[in-house]
Image (cartoon, rainbow, N blue to C red; front, side, top):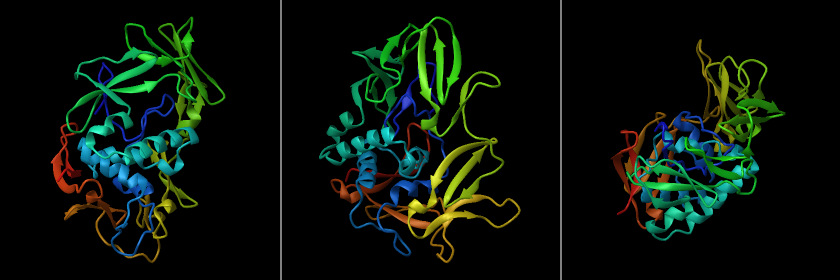
Length: 323
């Protein structure tokens, strides 16, 4: 869901961080970068005991109606390549959610606090930036981001009447500039810093306004098992295809386009069509990179596989649902 003028957001499976920016929405098969952390068997992939990360997705889907086969989950695809700070933040959230016994306990793990209205603007409260966030089940809650959290570059929460945000402090003149890979800006009397390197980007102030910018590219490509996605002439994502398991690699498709993707390694049989999904009793099965991957919903309170229409995206998809 696109942010409105009031900066309302949809819940992301990733914790918010002032230097992370918006994750690219890439094809669903890239989810295997996070999901396939258990051994990848031949044919269907059915981990008997879900990893903490897979169970995190199960609990999140069961308790917030998050679909398991739509673009929302693709926000997790770069988990293996997160910078140490972001990885630590996500691991903390995963550990908290894995301890949840009832759905009523999940909100604090996701940084969600008080209920809010769809038109509630962002606000500062005790140096915490609170943004009204929409869950997939249609509920609205303030999502908390401590401006002075460890590693934060913008430790002060301010509300200048236009919008609340985390900043470095007061500044004199609206401007933006680069210092190494840090993007500095001054807007409406307050400064902010973005670490472009955490986004896998470079800070560029040589032509036009200073900005974080990805390296130039002509098309998606492979490099030592990693997929470098290219969009509008710029690198948009880096994925470690081999993190999916021994059956996967970065591959170049045959044909004039020579498109690069994470796919089946040479000699591995095709099991399904990428993008397919189905319910198998209480398990969601997703076809990712032409291989089935199973998400055992029943692992959390006997949840089951269910088809739903997201009130956020209006898309039909599969999710884990309470029994």
